Amino acid sequence: MSDEEGRAFVPGHVTGFFSSHEADDPARAGSRGAGLTLSEGVTVTVEPASEARVELDGGQSVEAGRRVLDELDVTARVAATTDLPVGAGFGVSGAVALGTALAANEAFDCGRSENELVTVAHVAEIEAGTGLGDVVAQARGGVPVRLEPGAPEYNRLDGVSARRRVEYLSLGDRSTAEVLSGNTARLSEAGVDALVELVNEPTLASFARLSREFAERAGLLSDEVRAVIEDVEAEGGQASMAMLGETVFALDTGLTDAGYDAAVSDVDHCGATLVD
Image (tube, rainbow, N blue to C red):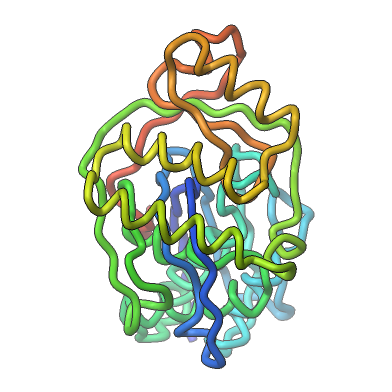
């Protein structure tokens, strides 16, 4: 065991649309779909400790991060910090899991490869019930398109080549586990249709349009989220809902143009990485 600390940065991830795919092996389970990774994200610091702890912003425990420590067989204190809203569709749980895997591997000389670490984090999030495809998307960066579900050994990823400003407005939180534990057949059918269309027209404008159509077809829009999206569209912008949270995201200055005090980000192009 090393007495060094490890630190990693993992971008936030906004899913525009997805389909859920179950499997007995959690490494094969996950989702197909597409999303945006953001220049804002989660910074995770791991250091040896006498008792395992995984804390987000000094308090909230993150089960997926704890599962990562168990799988790597290390005892550490994990401190994760983020400026992103938690439980609002930004993949924070997945980011904590992936950041924990990368930083713990560094701190404890675990000797795992990147794909192995992504798999550990992906499985941890699947088993925790807090996400399906955030981890693999956050590892890649950019505008990832998940063509096949699962961890790196099984999935297939592509992406939309784009560098754009992204705005977001969080109106509250929503339980990912609650949505995923329900009947996802309607949601998944809409997600598969959107993915087929995006593959045929892989542009950011197409992604935004398909995300909006997916949110409608999947029956996930609250009245409040719908009203904000319609305000953006009335000004000629493109917006949709972040899956799964009470959050609206828009391309360029869509939310600002509609009169909202939105947070501003950019598309991340590095993916998860170790930092000094």
